[in-house]
Image 1 (cartoon, one colour):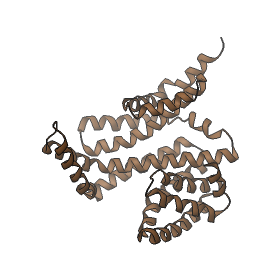
Image 2 (tube, rainbow, N blue to C red; image 1 turned 120 degrees about the vertical axis):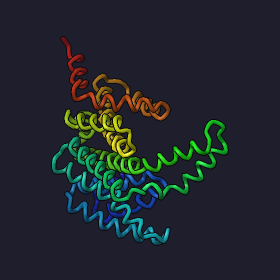
Image 3 (spheres, rainbow, N blue to C red; image 1 turned 90 degrees about the horizontal axis):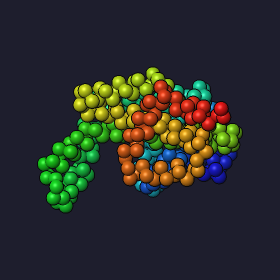
Image 4 (cartoon, rainbow, N blue to C red; image 1 turned 90 degrees about the vertical axis):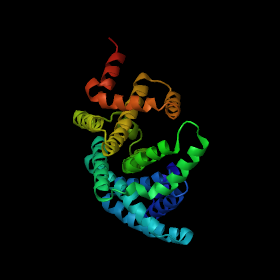
Length: 301
């Protein structure tokens, strides 16, 4: 990873090549798309928004060429620009100008919420694009299951299709966040060793953001609407990151082995309720000041 970052910083051509190659690889291995966007983030943070935008343009040309030669589908490059690179570039530009990770994530969240509103308003049949593959899955499940009827599974399928805009926006938001973190970590390794860990562990989204998040959750509970739940998915992603920041800070303050962090991440895949616990911790932290309390407890006297 660090060798890749070093290669990216050698010049715009090298950065564009990495972004394009990872974009193509991301079609087969989706996490590679995060590395692709992290390339744009790193160039923008180190060399400025203009250089980041030029690198994005060069990567667009390279990706269009690669995708045409491999898949005969140069439009893949346009999709990457709109959904992966431009959001990463915009958030990296905000972070460079404000030097505030919290504000950058808040802007990204606002963009994601707006995207959900626009999708439901302008493309209400957005989820229907996935109707056919979901139909095949539903039929197979109905044939293999003795607990659920085909009608019940069809009803669940309809709800999932209505919910897809929220899942789509929150997935892109999560990927953009990870790309931002990777790019910021790369920058810190070369220019401010240990700086990203400190920045992430001190992340505090503030009380106003937490109140807005609680209002959106309350609205979803009251009106019981798919659109409202779609908005909640974006809020959950934001405060999952806040909760993970708090978890990393607690591990550092308590001087616990980093292996506990790895174990916690692993357990989260098997016990999803831990995700809800992290989200709850992230939302309540602005009032509880958990980090400050732990630091005070560790001080002698």
